[in-house]
Amino acid sequence: MKIANVLVAAALATCLPALAQDAERGGRLYTDTAKLTGKPVASCASCHSDMATLRELLRNRGGRCDDPAALARWIEAVIGGAQPGAAGAKVQYRGVLKPKDVRDLAAYIACARQAAAGGTELAGALR
Image (cartoon, rainbow, N blue to C red):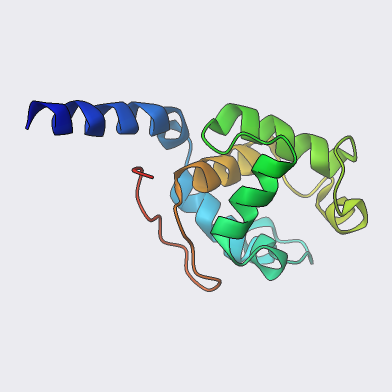
């Protein structure tokens, strides 16, 4: 029983930096970016509806899905055009997503195991 408690504590500690940000708001931004930003942009979910696929894409391109701070820096670089990817699609977010928005999105992605295309729930901190 003690080993299980240690494992749960370790998993939660991994996600605590993400929880310091607003992962729930990040989920709302992910599914309804235009509404939360007030700008006519597509939602993140419109292209990245499957969280497992998004997390795999991020890992394959050097993103760190388990580190919200590193993930936020990576997202900023993608939006800024410094990372490979769909640069034309990402340009719509320049000047729209504020640093807090990016941190909240990163917290959501770091903590979410799965997110349905229309859902904003966090699947939990344990992956």
